[in-house]
Image (tube, rainbow, N blue to C red; front, side):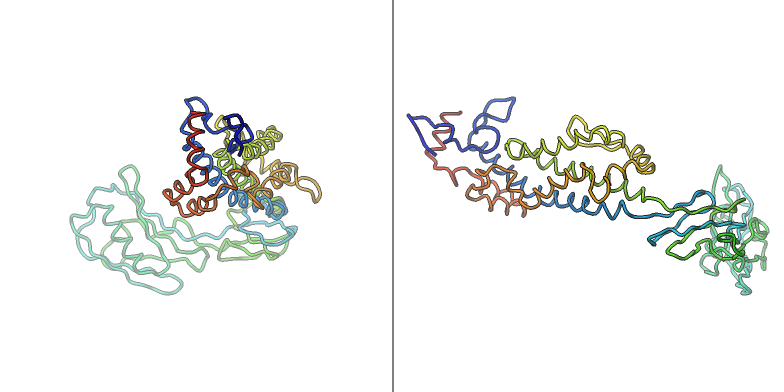
Length: 418
Protein backbone atom coordinates (compact mmCIF):
# COMPACT_ATOMS: atom_id res chain seq x y z
CA UNK A 1 0.00 0.00 0.00
CA UNK A 2 1.46 3.42 -0.87
CA UNK A 3 0.56 6.99 0.04
CA UNK A 4 1.29 9.85 -2.39
CA UNK A 5 0.93 13.56 -1.67
CA UNK A 6 -0.96 12.89 1.51
CA UNK A 7 -3.65 10.80 -0.28
CA UNK A 8 -4.21 7.15 -0.79
CA UNK A 9 -4.02 6.20 -4.46
CA UNK A 10 -6.46 3.76 -6.01
CA UNK A 11 -3.83 1.02 -6.02
CA UNK A 12 -3.34 1.59 -2.30
CA UNK A 13 -6.97 0.93 -1.43
CA UNK A 14 -7.58 -2.37 0.37
CA UNK A 15 -9.93 -3.21 -2.52
CA UNK A 16 -12.03 -6.26 -1.74
CA UNK A 17 -14.67 -7.06 -4.32
CA UNK A 18 -16.55 -4.76 -6.63
CA UNK A 19 -16.90 -1.73 -4.36
CA UNK A 20 -14.38 0.38 -2.56
CA UNK A 21 -14.76 0.23 1.23
CA UNK A 22 -16.62 3.22 2.55
CA UNK A 23 -18.86 3.60 -0.49
CA UNK A 24 -21.66 1.65 1.18
CA UNK A 25 -23.74 -1.14 -0.27
CA UNK A 26 -26.24 1.03 -2.04
CA UNK A 27 -29.31 3.01 -1.08
CA UNK A 28 -28.06 4.57 2.15
CA UNK A 29 -25.29 6.48 3.81
CA UNK A 30 -21.81 4.89 3.84
CA UNK A 31 -21.29 2.55 6.74
CA UNK A 32 -18.36 2.45 9.13
CA UNK A 33 -15.23 1.40 7.21
CA UNK A 34 -14.35 -1.25 9.77
CA UNK A 35 -17.86 -2.71 9.68
CA UNK A 36 -17.83 -2.82 5.89
CA UNK A 37 -14.44 -4.49 5.70
CA UNK A 38 -15.56 -6.91 8.38
CA UNK A 39 -18.74 -7.79 6.46
CA UNK A 40 -16.88 -8.19 3.14
CA UNK A 41 -14.38 -10.62 4.57
CA UNK A 42 -17.00 -12.62 6.45
CA UNK A 43 -19.21 -12.80 3.32
CA UNK A 44 -16.26 -14.06 1.27
CA UNK A 45 -15.48 -16.72 3.87
CA UNK A 46 -19.14 -17.70 4.10
CA UNK A 47 -19.28 -18.09 0.32
CA UNK A 48 -16.21 -20.33 0.32
CA UNK A 49 -17.62 -22.51 3.11
CA UNK A 50 -20.99 -22.90 1.35
CA UNK A 51 -20.08 -22.95 -2.34
CA UNK A 52 -17.75 -25.94 -2.13
CA UNK A 53 -20.23 -28.53 -0.82
CA UNK A 54 -23.17 -27.04 -2.75
CA UNK A 55 -21.34 -27.17 -6.07
CA UNK A 56 -20.14 -30.69 -5.25
CA UNK A 57 -23.76 -31.81 -4.77
CA UNK A 58 -24.80 -30.31 -8.11
CA UNK A 59 -21.74 -31.80 -9.81
CA UNK A 60 -22.64 -35.24 -8.43
CA UNK A 61 -26.21 -34.95 -9.77
CA UNK A 62 -24.91 -33.93 -13.20
CA UNK A 63 -22.41 -36.80 -13.22
CA UNK A 64 -25.13 -39.34 -12.43
CA UNK A 65 -27.42 -38.16 -15.24
CA UNK A 66 -26.10 -40.67 -17.76
CA UNK A 67 -27.09 -43.62 -15.56
CA UNK A 68 -30.51 -42.12 -14.80
CA UNK A 69 -31.27 -41.18 -18.41
CA UNK A 70 -30.00 -44.52 -19.67
CA UNK A 71 -32.22 -46.49 -17.33
CA UNK A 72 -34.86 -48.66 -18.98
CA UNK A 73 -38.28 -49.02 -17.39
CA UNK A 74 -41.18 -51.37 -18.06
CA UNK A 75 -44.62 -49.87 -18.65
CA UNK A 76 -48.11 -51.38 -18.86
CA UNK A 77 -50.34 -50.17 -21.66
CA UNK A 78 -53.37 -50.43 -19.35
CA UNK A 79 -52.67 -49.74 -15.68
CA UNK A 80 -56.36 -50.21 -14.79
CA UNK A 81 -55.85 -53.91 -15.47
CA UNK A 82 -52.13 -54.58 -15.05
CA UNK A 83 -49.38 -52.61 -13.31
CA UNK A 84 -45.64 -53.06 -13.36
CA UNK A 85 -44.54 -53.56 -9.75
CA UNK A 86 -40.80 -53.48 -10.48
CA UNK A 87 -38.23 -54.05 -13.20
CA UNK A 88 -34.52 -54.66 -12.63
CA UNK A 89 -33.37 -56.03 -15.97
CA UNK A 90 -31.43 -54.32 -18.77
CA UNK A 91 -33.96 -55.11 -21.50
CA UNK A 92 -37.71 -55.43 -21.18
CA UNK A 93 -38.82 -58.81 -22.57
CA UNK A 94 -41.65 -58.82 -25.09
CA UNK A 95 -44.57 -59.63 -22.84
CA UNK A 96 -48.36 -59.58 -22.95
CA UNK A 97 -50.63 -60.78 -20.15
CA UNK A 98 -54.24 -61.93 -20.48
CA UNK A 99 -56.04 -61.67 -17.13
CA UNK A 100 -59.14 -63.83 -16.83
CA UNK A 101 -59.64 -62.95 -13.17
CA UNK A 102 -57.67 -61.27 -10.43
CA UNK A 103 -57.19 -62.90 -7.04
CA UNK A 104 -59.64 -61.67 -4.40
CA UNK A 105 -60.30 -61.96 -0.70
CA UNK A 106 -63.56 -63.24 0.74
CA UNK A 107 -65.61 -60.41 2.13
CA UNK A 108 -68.72 -60.58 4.31
CA UNK A 109 -70.33 -57.13 4.43
CA UNK A 110 -72.75 -56.77 7.34
CA UNK A 111 -76.00 -54.87 7.72
CA UNK A 112 -76.06 -51.09 8.01
CA UNK A 113 -77.56 -50.31 11.43
CA UNK A 114 -78.41 -47.05 13.16
CA UNK A 115 -75.11 -46.45 14.95
CA UNK A 116 -76.46 -44.96 18.19
CA UNK A 117 -79.43 -47.31 18.67
CA UNK A 118 -79.22 -50.14 21.21
CA UNK A 119 -80.69 -53.18 19.47
CA UNK A 120 -78.65 -55.96 21.09
CA UNK A 121 -79.43 -57.28 24.59
CA UNK A 122 -76.69 -57.69 27.16
CA UNK A 123 -75.07 -61.07 27.69
CA UNK A 124 -72.41 -63.43 26.37
CA UNK A 125 -72.16 -64.07 22.65
CA UNK A 126 -70.10 -66.74 20.93
CA UNK A 127 -69.63 -67.81 17.31
CA UNK A 128 -67.15 -69.81 15.27
CA UNK A 129 -65.11 -69.06 12.17
CA UNK A 130 -63.75 -71.84 9.98
CA UNK A 131 -60.75 -71.03 7.77
CA UNK A 132 -58.85 -73.62 5.73
CA UNK A 133 -60.42 -76.54 7.60
CA UNK A 134 -59.59 -75.08 11.03
CA UNK A 135 -62.32 -73.82 13.37
CA UNK A 136 -61.98 -71.22 16.12
CA UNK A 137 -64.62 -70.31 18.68
CA UNK A 138 -64.78 -66.61 19.51
CA UNK A 139 -66.73 -65.02 22.36
CA UNK A 140 -67.33 -61.61 23.89
CA UNK A 141 -69.68 -59.97 26.38
CA UNK A 142 -72.07 -57.09 25.65
CA UNK A 143 -73.72 -54.69 28.10
CA UNK A 144 -77.16 -53.11 27.83
CA UNK A 145 -75.57 -49.66 27.50
CA UNK A 146 -73.78 -50.57 24.26
CA UNK A 147 -74.88 -48.86 21.06
CA UNK A 148 -74.97 -50.84 17.84
CA UNK A 149 -71.63 -49.33 16.81
CA UNK A 150 -70.03 -50.25 20.16
CA UNK A 151 -71.41 -53.79 19.85
CA UNK A 152 -69.91 -54.09 16.35
CA UNK A 153 -66.59 -52.76 17.57
CA UNK A 154 -66.50 -55.23 20.46
CA UNK A 155 -67.26 -58.08 18.05
CA UNK A 156 -64.55 -56.86 15.63
CA UNK A 157 -61.98 -56.67 18.44
CA UNK A 158 -62.73 -60.26 19.45
CA UNK A 159 -62.17 -61.47 15.87
CA UNK A 160 -58.94 -59.54 15.40
CA UNK A 161 -57.53 -60.74 18.71
CA UNK A 162 -58.13 -64.33 17.62
CA UNK A 163 -55.67 -63.81 14.71
CA UNK A 164 -57.12 -66.57 12.53
CA UNK A 165 -56.70 -65.01 9.09
CA UNK A 166 -59.93 -63.00 9.11
CA UNK A 167 -59.86 -59.24 9.70
CA UNK A 168 -62.89 -57.41 11.10
CA UNK A 169 -63.61 -53.69 10.75
CA UNK A 170 -66.45 -51.23 11.36
CA UNK A 171 -67.36 -48.45 8.94
CA UNK A 172 -69.54 -45.46 9.82
CA UNK A 173 -71.47 -43.12 7.51
CA UNK A 174 -74.57 -40.96 7.85
CA UNK A 175 -75.20 -42.05 11.46
CA UNK A 176 -75.15 -45.71 10.41
CA UNK A 177 -72.48 -48.34 11.02
CA UNK A 178 -71.69 -51.73 9.51
CA UNK A 179 -69.43 -54.63 10.42
CA UNK A 180 -67.22 -56.34 7.83
CA UNK A 181 -65.30 -59.64 7.93
CA UNK A 182 -62.60 -60.14 5.29
CA UNK A 183 -59.90 -62.76 4.72
CA UNK A 184 -56.44 -61.39 5.41
CA UNK A 185 -55.00 -62.53 2.06
CA UNK A 186 -56.30 -63.34 -1.40
CA UNK A 187 -56.82 -66.80 -2.86
CA UNK A 188 -59.46 -69.52 -2.82
CA UNK A 189 -57.76 -71.29 0.10
CA UNK A 190 -58.65 -68.31 2.29
CA UNK A 191 -62.43 -68.74 2.15
CA UNK A 192 -64.15 -68.91 5.54
CA UNK A 193 -67.54 -69.54 7.14
CA UNK A 194 -69.14 -67.93 10.22
CA UNK A 195 -71.84 -69.47 12.50
CA UNK A 196 -73.51 -68.41 15.75
CA UNK A 197 -73.03 -70.66 18.81
CA UNK A 198 -74.50 -68.61 21.69
CA UNK A 199 -76.75 -65.68 20.92
CA UNK A 200 -77.38 -64.29 17.45
CA UNK A 201 -74.53 -61.79 16.91
CA UNK A 202 -73.58 -63.15 13.45
CA UNK A 203 -77.19 -63.15 12.22
CA UNK A 204 -78.05 -59.76 13.72
CA UNK A 205 -74.92 -58.10 12.31
CA UNK A 206 -75.44 -59.79 8.92
CA UNK A 207 -71.89 -61.14 8.54
CA UNK A 208 -72.80 -64.79 7.96
CA UNK A 209 -72.90 -64.64 4.15
CA UNK A 210 -70.12 -63.84 1.69
CA UNK A 211 -70.68 -60.77 -0.46
CA UNK A 212 -67.42 -61.47 -2.36
CA UNK A 213 -65.96 -64.94 -2.80
CA UNK A 214 -62.27 -65.65 -2.34
CA UNK A 215 -60.65 -66.73 -5.60
CA UNK A 216 -57.28 -67.34 -7.22
CA UNK A 217 -55.95 -65.23 -10.07
CA UNK A 218 -56.18 -66.79 -13.52
CA UNK A 219 -53.97 -65.44 -16.29
CA UNK A 220 -51.81 -66.40 -19.27
CA UNK A 221 -48.57 -64.94 -20.64
CA UNK A 222 -47.82 -64.48 -24.34
CA UNK A 223 -50.75 -66.68 -25.33
CA UNK A 224 -49.58 -69.64 -23.24
CA UNK A 225 -51.51 -71.95 -20.95
CA UNK A 226 -53.64 -70.50 -18.21
CA UNK A 227 -51.89 -70.14 -14.87
CA UNK A 228 -53.29 -69.66 -11.36
CA UNK A 229 -51.96 -67.73 -8.40
CA UNK A 230 -53.26 -67.09 -4.88
CA UNK A 231 -51.79 -63.59 -5.08
CA UNK A 232 -51.90 -60.81 -7.64
CA UNK A 233 -48.15 -60.20 -7.35
CA UNK A 234 -46.64 -62.19 -10.20
CA UNK A 235 -42.96 -62.72 -11.06
CA UNK A 236 -42.69 -63.00 -14.85
CA UNK A 237 -38.93 -63.51 -14.87
CA UNK A 238 -36.16 -61.39 -16.44
CA UNK A 239 -36.43 -58.98 -13.52
CA UNK A 240 -40.08 -58.17 -14.25
CA UNK A 241 -42.75 -58.28 -11.54
CA UNK A 242 -46.35 -57.23 -12.18
CA UNK A 243 -49.56 -56.70 -10.21
CA UNK A 244 -52.84 -58.03 -11.59
CA UNK A 245 -55.58 -55.48 -10.95
CA UNK A 246 -58.66 -56.63 -12.84
CA UNK A 247 -59.81 -58.96 -15.60
CA UNK A 248 -59.29 -57.87 -19.20
CA UNK A 249 -61.02 -58.55 -22.52
CA UNK A 250 -57.67 -58.64 -24.30
CA UNK A 251 -54.04 -59.17 -23.44
CA UNK A 252 -52.18 -56.19 -21.97
CA UNK A 253 -48.75 -55.47 -23.45
CA UNK A 254 -45.71 -54.51 -21.37
CA UNK A 255 -43.27 -52.28 -23.21
CA UNK A 256 -39.86 -50.78 -22.49
CA UNK A 257 -39.37 -47.06 -22.14
CA UNK A 258 -37.42 -44.27 -20.52
CA UNK A 259 -37.42 -43.63 -16.80
CA UNK A 260 -39.70 -40.59 -16.82
CA UNK A 261 -39.84 -40.42 -13.02
CA UNK A 262 -36.05 -40.53 -12.78
CA UNK A 263 -35.69 -37.73 -15.34
CA UNK A 264 -38.27 -35.63 -13.52
CA UNK A 265 -36.55 -36.14 -10.17
CA UNK A 266 -33.15 -35.28 -11.66
CA UNK A 267 -34.44 -32.04 -13.19
CA UNK A 268 -36.11 -31.07 -9.92
CA UNK A 269 -32.89 -31.80 -8.05
CA UNK A 270 -30.82 -29.71 -10.48
CA UNK A 271 -33.17 -26.75 -10.01
CA UNK A 272 -32.94 -27.00 -6.22
CA UNK A 273 -29.14 -27.26 -6.27
CA UNK A 274 -28.69 -24.40 -8.74
CA UNK A 275 -30.88 -22.24 -6.50
CA UNK A 276 -28.77 -23.19 -3.49
CA UNK A 277 -25.51 -22.38 -5.26
CA UNK A 278 -26.85 -19.04 -6.54
CA UNK A 279 -27.99 -18.16 -3.03
CA UNK A 280 -24.48 -18.73 -1.70
CA UNK A 281 -22.91 -16.67 -4.50
CA UNK A 282 -25.35 -13.77 -4.25
CA UNK A 283 -24.49 -13.42 -0.58
CA UNK A 284 -21.02 -12.27 -1.68
CA UNK A 285 -21.96 -10.42 -4.84
CA UNK A 286 -20.09 -7.27 -3.81
CA UNK A 287 -16.94 -9.25 -4.65
CA UNK A 288 -16.18 -8.88 -8.37
CA UNK A 289 -15.00 -12.47 -8.71
CA UNK A 290 -18.12 -13.87 -7.07
CA UNK A 291 -20.29 -11.52 -9.11
CA UNK A 292 -18.76 -12.97 -12.29
CA UNK A 293 -19.72 -16.43 -11.05
CA UNK A 294 -23.32 -15.28 -10.53
CA UNK A 295 -23.38 -13.88 -14.04
CA UNK A 296 -21.97 -17.13 -15.47
CA UNK A 297 -24.70 -19.16 -13.78
CA UNK A 298 -27.44 -16.72 -14.79
CA UNK A 299 -26.11 -16.71 -18.36
CA UNK A 300 -26.55 -20.50 -18.57
CA UNK A 301 -30.12 -20.14 -17.35
CA UNK A 302 -30.92 -17.30 -19.75
CA UNK A 303 -29.51 -19.20 -22.75
CA UNK A 304 -31.84 -22.09 -21.90
CA UNK A 305 -34.79 -19.98 -20.77
CA UNK A 306 -37.17 -21.15 -23.50
CA UNK A 307 -36.47 -24.86 -23.04
CA UNK A 308 -36.68 -24.54 -19.25
CA UNK A 309 -39.95 -22.62 -19.55
CA UNK A 310 -41.43 -25.36 -21.72
CA UNK A 311 -40.72 -27.77 -18.87
CA UNK A 312 -42.40 -25.49 -16.32
CA UNK A 313 -39.17 -24.03 -14.89
CA UNK A 314 -39.03 -20.24 -14.63
CA UNK A 315 -36.91 -17.64 -12.87
CA UNK A 316 -38.75 -15.32 -10.51
CA UNK A 317 -38.00 -11.71 -9.65
CA UNK A 318 -35.99 -12.88 -6.68
CA UNK A 319 -33.67 -14.71 -9.07
CA UNK A 320 -34.73 -18.15 -7.86
CA UNK A 321 -35.95 -20.89 -10.19
CA UNK A 322 -39.43 -22.24 -9.56
CA UNK A 323 -40.97 -25.48 -10.82
CA UNK A 324 -44.50 -26.12 -12.06
CA UNK A 325 -44.69 -29.78 -11.06
CA UNK A 326 -47.56 -30.61 -13.41
CA UNK A 327 -45.79 -29.22 -16.47
CA UNK A 328 -42.49 -30.85 -15.45
CA UNK A 329 -44.18 -34.24 -15.08
CA UNK A 330 -45.77 -33.88 -18.53
CA UNK A 331 -42.41 -32.90 -20.04
CA UNK A 332 -40.78 -35.92 -18.40
CA UNK A 333 -43.45 -38.28 -19.68
CA UNK A 334 -43.25 -37.02 -23.28
CA UNK A 335 -39.43 -37.24 -23.28
CA UNK A 336 -38.69 -33.49 -23.32
CA UNK A 337 -36.73 -33.56 -20.06
CA UNK A 338 -34.74 -36.57 -21.24
CA UNK A 339 -33.88 -34.87 -24.55
CA UNK A 340 -32.94 -31.59 -22.85
CA UNK A 341 -30.55 -33.27 -20.41
CA UNK A 342 -29.13 -36.09 -22.50
CA UNK A 343 -27.66 -34.23 -25.48
CA UNK A 344 -26.47 -36.32 -28.42
CA UNK A 345 -24.20 -39.34 -28.64
CA UNK A 346 -21.67 -39.43 -25.82
CA UNK A 347 -21.70 -35.65 -25.36
CA UNK A 348 -23.98 -34.10 -22.72
CA UNK A 349 -26.27 -31.21 -23.56
CA UNK A 350 -24.81 -27.71 -23.46
CA UNK A 351 -26.90 -26.98 -20.37
CA UNK A 352 -25.33 -29.87 -18.50
CA UNK A 353 -21.80 -29.26 -19.80
CA UNK A 354 -21.95 -25.53 -18.96
CA UNK A 355 -23.15 -26.22 -15.44
CA UNK A 356 -20.52 -28.96 -15.04
CA UNK A 357 -17.76 -26.55 -16.11
CA UNK A 358 -18.85 -24.05 -13.47
CA UNK A 359 -19.31 -26.58 -10.67
CA UNK A 360 -15.95 -28.24 -11.44
CA UNK A 361 -14.28 -24.84 -11.15
CA UNK A 362 -15.90 -24.15 -7.79
CA UNK A 363 -15.45 -27.64 -6.36
CA UNK A 364 -11.76 -27.77 -7.26
CA UNK A 365 -11.02 -24.38 -5.69
CA UNK A 366 -13.80 -22.09 -4.44
CA UNK A 367 -11.14 -19.52 -3.46
CA UNK A 368 -10.67 -18.57 -7.11
CA UNK A 369 -14.15 -17.07 -7.04
CA UNK A 370 -13.36 -14.47 -4.37
CA UNK A 371 -10.96 -11.53 -4.38
CA UNK A 372 -7.35 -12.47 -3.69
CA UNK A 373 -7.26 -9.64 -1.15
CA UNK A 374 -9.98 -11.34 0.88
CA UNK A 375 -8.40 -14.77 0.44
CA UNK A 376 -4.99 -13.52 1.57
CA UNK A 377 -6.31 -11.66 4.60
CA UNK A 378 -4.54 -12.77 7.80
CA UNK A 379 -7.03 -14.72 9.84
CA UNK A 380 -9.13 -15.77 6.83
CA UNK A 381 -8.60 -19.45 7.71
CA UNK A 382 -9.73 -18.68 11.26
CA UNK A 383 -12.95 -17.22 9.89
CA UNK A 384 -13.57 -20.36 7.83
CA UNK A 385 -12.97 -22.47 10.91
CA UNK A 386 -15.33 -20.32 12.98
CA UNK A 387 -17.99 -20.62 10.25
CA UNK A 388 -17.76 -24.40 10.23
CA UNK A 389 -18.24 -24.46 13.99
CA UNK A 390 -20.95 -21.75 13.89
CA UNK A 391 -18.90 -19.72 16.39
CA UNK A 392 -20.16 -16.22 15.61
CA UNK A 393 -18.02 -14.50 18.24
CA UNK A 394 -14.81 -16.10 16.96
CA UNK A 395 -15.79 -15.27 13.38
CA UNK A 396 -16.41 -11.59 14.14
CA UNK A 397 -13.18 -11.32 16.12
CA UNK A 398 -11.10 -12.98 13.40
CA UNK A 399 -12.54 -10.63 10.78
CA UNK A 400 -11.80 -7.42 12.67
CA UNK A 401 -9.83 -5.14 10.31
CA UNK A 402 -7.48 -4.04 13.10
CA UNK A 403 -6.16 -7.60 13.09
CA UNK A 404 -4.63 -7.05 9.67
CA UNK A 405 -4.66 -3.26 8.95
CA UNK A 406 -2.67 -0.83 11.15
CA UNK A 407 -4.95 1.23 13.34
CA UNK A 408 -3.53 4.57 12.15
CA UNK A 409 -4.32 3.59 8.55
CA UNK A 410 -7.84 2.55 9.55
CA UNK A 411 -8.32 5.93 11.19
CA UNK A 412 -7.05 7.65 8.07
CA UNK A 413 -9.43 5.66 5.82
CA UNK A 414 -12.34 6.35 8.11
CA UNK A 415 -11.67 10.09 8.09
CA UNK A 416 -11.09 10.13 4.33
CA UNK A 417 -14.08 8.05 3.26
CA UNK A 418 -16.51 8.51 6.14
